[in-house]
Length: 312
Length: 260
Image (tube, rainbow over all chains, first blue to last red; front, side):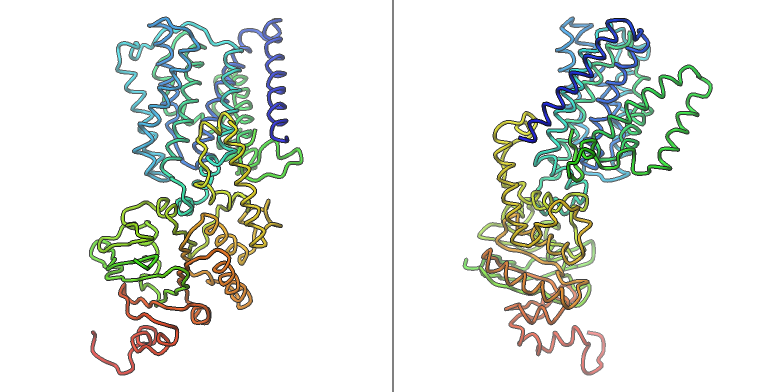
C-alpha cells in the first residue's frame, strides 16, 4: 500500500541521516561545537513540530511554549540528578508532566480566541518560569547543575518519534477535526466535533513533545536556569513555525534547521548577530509572507496531490 | 409525541433585548417547512436556539422525544439536527473530500492513540469514511472536484458542498439558513431540485429560512412567519400569502395608525 511505503521511506531516510550524523561525529569530522549544534538543531525541530500542531494545525495561537519546555527540562533534571534514575525514564516523565501542565493551562485558556489566547498563554509561560525561579529545590535563579547525557542517538530517536506521532495524528480523523477547527470553529462544532476536546488534546500533545525537548535540552548543557525559558524562547519557537509556513510540518522542520544553522554561525559576529538574524527574518517574511512552505508539505513536490495536511 | 421537533414557548433574551420569545413550532417527520420574516425578525436566532449555539432563556426544545436545551452544538448534531449557514462556512483550505469526511467524524470511533500507533481500527474506519464520503460526493455530483480546495469551488457548488456536508453528518432534521442567498435564478432552480431530491433520498425533515418567496412558496408545505422575535402566522403558502399580519409585517399597515 501507498501509505505503508511512505512510512518505510521515511524510516530509511531517517536511518540514513542518523548514520551520516553518527559517522561524522564518531570520526571526529564534526568537532564538539558542531555536534552540539546538531543536537540543538534536533531540539529546535522537536519544539517547532510540537508547536506546529497547536498553531499550524489546530489554529490556536499559543506563545507560551517555552513554559512547557521548562517543565520538561526541570522535571527530567530532577529525576536524573536528585533521584538518579535513568535518562530515558527522565525524558518520558518530563514529557508526561509537561503534558499535564498543558492540560492544566489549556482547559481554562483554550476558551479564549485569537489575541486573548496569545496573551493568556504568554502569561502562563511566564508563571511557569517564575515558579521555577522561586523553588530552592531546583536552585532558584542560580540554576541547577545537570550532567551531559543527551547524545546524537537519543536526540534523533526522540525526533523520529515526534515527527511520526504528530504526522500520524494529523493524518487521521482527529487531525482533520483539528484542521476543521482552524478553518472554521463554528462549522466544526456544527459538524459534531467536540471542539474543546480537540483543542485541549492538541495542546496537551504539543506540550508533551515540548517536555521531551526539555529533557534533551537540560541534559545537553551543564546547567539550566529559569532565564533560558523566558518568553523570548517562546518567540524563537513561534518564529520557526511561522517562517516555515503555518500548517506545514516539513516547513517547521526546514525553518528550524535553517535558523539554527544561521544563529550558530552568527555567533562568530556577536556585535551584529541579532541584527543579521532579524534582517533574515524580515527578508523572508517580505518575499514569502506565507512562510517557506506555505501550507504545503515536502511530499507534495513528488507528484502527490494533497491539500493542507501535515504529512511527513 | 407525534412530532419530530417540538418547540414550546422558547425564547432568548440578550440583556434587555428579547430577540425571540414565545416561539412555538412543531415539525412532523418528512415535512418541508419554511421560516420567513423581515430582516432582523429573529430567524437565524431561532436556528441558533435549535442547534445549541444559544441556550434558550425560556421554554423547551424537544427533538425525537429528547430535551435539547443546554446541549452544545456538537451534541445537538450528534442527536440528529444538522445545519448550513447563511454565509457559507466551509473548511476552505481542506479538500472537498475532506470537508465531507469531517462530517463523518463522529461516526468513527477509533481513539487518538489508535491513530497515533496506526492500529487496525484506524485503517479500517478511515477506509470506511473515505468510501462513504466518495459515495456522497457522487450523489451530489461533486466527485470531480474531490481534490480541489473547497475555497476554489464556484459559489453555487460551495452551497451544494455545504448541504452535502450537513447531510453527511446523518441528520433526521436539516436546517437550511438562506440556501438561495446570492444565487442567480438558474442556480436557485437547481437548488430547489436538489432540496426535493435530498428529501426523498434521505427521508429527511427540512426547515429552511429563505427570502426568495418563489422558492419558499414553491416547495414548502407549511410556513412559519416571524416578526420582531414573535411568531405572527403559521400555515400553508396560500394562507400565508393572504394573511393580513404577514402583509403588514412586510409591507406596512394599510391605514396609517399611531404606534402600536
